[in-house]
Image (cartoon, rainbow, N blue to C red; front, side, top):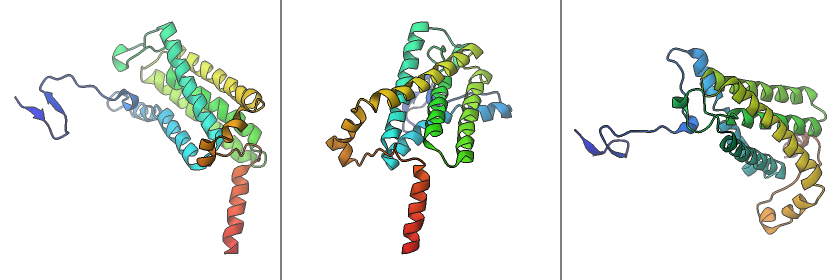
Length: 225
């Protein structure tokens, strides 16, 4: 019997119970190609969080910060609901924690609703592009929700409940941002702080189709050189 440091750098003896990192560990039946695709779909919430953080760091837009903040609050709300309802998952060996409501479905519901409403009010010219992004977000949401049921991590009701809560939370958060945080002046005060000014945090919310304007400006400047 061998023990001590192995080639992976860990220290354990034979028979030690090992755990996988559940955040990215999804199981499907061997040879099930649909299951493999849906297991990848279950990773979309992680990809979206990385995308949102990247947007915050690269764009330095207050809108991105508000989206990420709402997404994290939505996750905290999901945890509270699970602790209150305490409904088990359909197959306990597939995941830890309670299953009602599905956190994946709630995450996607929030993202789909907030992004759809935000794009609807901010993109006014390229309607085809706007609809494509909105439909793409909806399709991703359905895929993630379906993956949780197909792979056995949640029941249909747990996924439907998560999706519904997420959609409502996304709409409520958008309303709070547009009708409470901005009108109250809290966002403006935040932007006036030393930290936000030092980090160059900006608010381009009042500029419609900002991506198109930035593209045309960059094209104009590059042609002048």
